[in-house]
Length: 436
Image 1 (tube, rainbow, N blue to C red):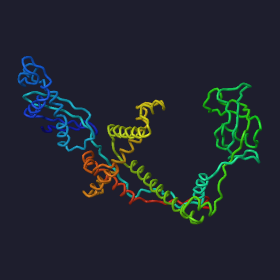
Image 2: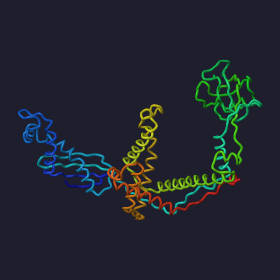
Image 3: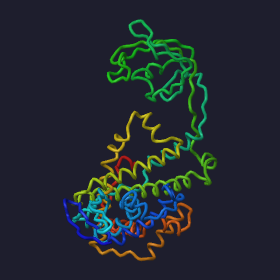
Image 4: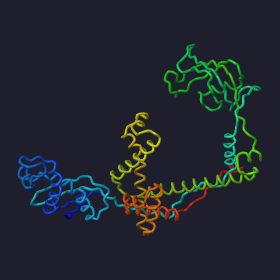
């Protein structure tokens, strides 16, 4: 078989004509005959014993042609694509134009190819790097979180409720003197200042003591979810049963000994500084890379084929399905709960998919233009990383993942490193107030 012609029919699309010789077709028919004839009942012959010539005379010479085409499909596709020298993304159509015992096969493929890519200005991209030095506020925040985890809840009896307290209340809502649905509860736990209730409610509970009964007057917001309550005034009859308060431990050396391996508050704070700095450094690097990726995307000039974007969407949905399965759910159930459809989900992913395709195209072009080399050792190391990540033998990875694709991934990462190394990174200064 050989490629007869290759024609550019439109942007990123080619038509390939492939010839299969009569001898190659005859050989394929002979191979499929051995399988197909075993299932055929021919009068006068035992099952599977009728000669090929007899069957072809009885049913026509094309009786095994479809099975032969199926048998030759992958070799035909591979030959056409490899012979064309094109970077084929996928096959749009495959048609048999001619087929016959004497003339063989003439097939026509329409394929989508990688688009032509232009990219300039990727050296010297200016990006801002967030500050990484920990602020006093951040250190205090870390300590407060540890205090919260080590706090205890105590009952308050010597004062009225105040912001931050947890109260246990009964409430019964009325509108125009009548109770309304969903406006009543008993022994309800409410943290004052949490914003859990409509505006004004929690403020009016503050200041009251246990066993007090009182009215709370509020107006439902105009955007309230219940249509019949939007913008309407209401009165809640409230009884306060109990006030509870979260008591936090004092921050001193004894606290530090209880919650860490350190003996003094100064040592503990120094360790927290290092932890926060490390976390902020990683976040800052991610932010720099995000800005660089956005810049690369903007600089890519290419007519991206829809097929590439749709395939990226497919990958995203497959990954999402795997996440759902890990959580004990499937895509069908998720869409039912969210009242969505596969089409609406695909639409949500499309913009992100387009960006991911564009950044890969851009990085690939940068790697080509900068002649970034990929060594065999780097490829082997990448195969090993994949094998270790999935705890499978390297040989299995190599059977599943093409070396060509691994080389592309390494090239793209090297291109990203090149862009980052040549970027102008402006380190932002922290706010003066935050440093105080």
